[in-house]
Length: 381
Length: 184
Image 1 (cartoon, rainbow over the protein chains, first blue to last red):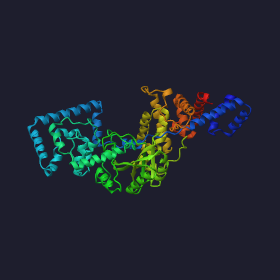
Image 2 (image 1 turned 60 degrees about the vertical axis):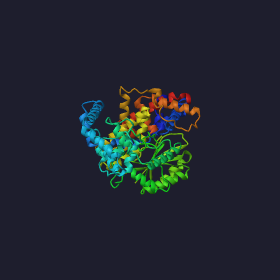
Image 3 (image 1 turned 90 degrees about the horizontal axis):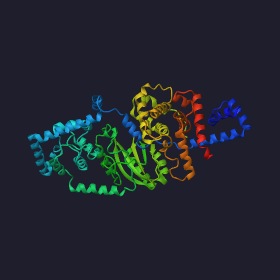
Image 4 (image 1 turned 180 degrees about the horizontal axis):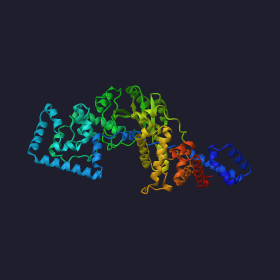
């Protein structure tokens, strides 16, 4: 066997894939050829180096993004895509929005009946609080032509009951520029939560409507509560720099979906109820669609499947505290509870080990050298 | 190197065929790192790798009814990933840097920086050497030495003869060895 023939077998030798005959011939040659032995050592060292490379991990939130992308689009969107197919989508879509917006402005300005109606609504808004509550939802109704500008809102409003007024008012306060084109308060609230400032600002805004909306802000007591909560959340800024896996600008399909059967209570209301049930009041998430602050991905995104969600949430918080961490937030994402924690890097392994005892855990992590890891755990059963 | 490709999770395929959305989620959870790993080692860019990895699963989702189950689900996903990566690399409008820049986006094996500068230099040289391999050789090397597939699984995923897998792997490794000679 020549040196060339021998070296052709080196790679297969590294995989233990030689036939007995090949192996015998190779060994015989190597016994008398120092040069080939040196070549073999070099190749085996190279293979060892490649195999020592750490396997890479998919980015945090990858599973959610894939699952959301795999869900079929609502039928009206499929129809819209079919209609748009022969033309470039963006210019036509933008033109349609401009046209609808322009028509809405013309209708609003040009119709004395509508101006009168707006005036009446303002008057109603100035009425005593009992009357104002009744008038509030009506005062932001869209002109008829603008309703078609939000095909998604029909989807959002489906299956939802009327939310508590405080929830509606909070949503309006959080995003005062979002208004006018959604048929139900629930849909308006969700749009307000996911709207990027200036992204869907309606062209029909007017000073009168803004005045009416200012009248819809929560009473001072409620404002104080929100301010307190915000301060508490800011206090944990350093501990959890990254919570919430998605940007407010890109809500996943899961977020847009109605809650699962049996979860008739709207998600924010569930969150409030659970927060009250907790021994220590759990702060709301600082980032993501709830606050409008763009969310950076957490260092670790985990899923925990358990029999009892509330018990697991309590256990997770206790576990985080036990390993020197703490809870930094909680939110409902696509009907599922997400517990946000800050866990010290040094005790993270212990945290994972003990979390695995609570249920089935799957973890996606990002390489980071921060001493305190931002961990978002989705708890479901 | 990753552990070898084991058997499919029991009962997953029938549930996928039945359109169970939870089953699809389990599929993505089970194979996300493997699929993303191949895409990243082949393309050298995390954003592009995620795009391709997502497309792999979406194609599998659409085509699950046509999957006959003769191969493992994992092998099938590797096959889709390999094809998409090679297509992307061959596309004329791919403007991303190749050669030395490729694979530089892959995180270092020891982010805690405990390793010496020599080790870091070796890591960089190794990634650069892998990135410089011809696409078909790099793919076989990644599937074997990074993802831990057997010759037979690679042959199945790439629709190649096992002998071709063996010879491509041999050439890839020899080429790497030449480039890393100075670290010997």
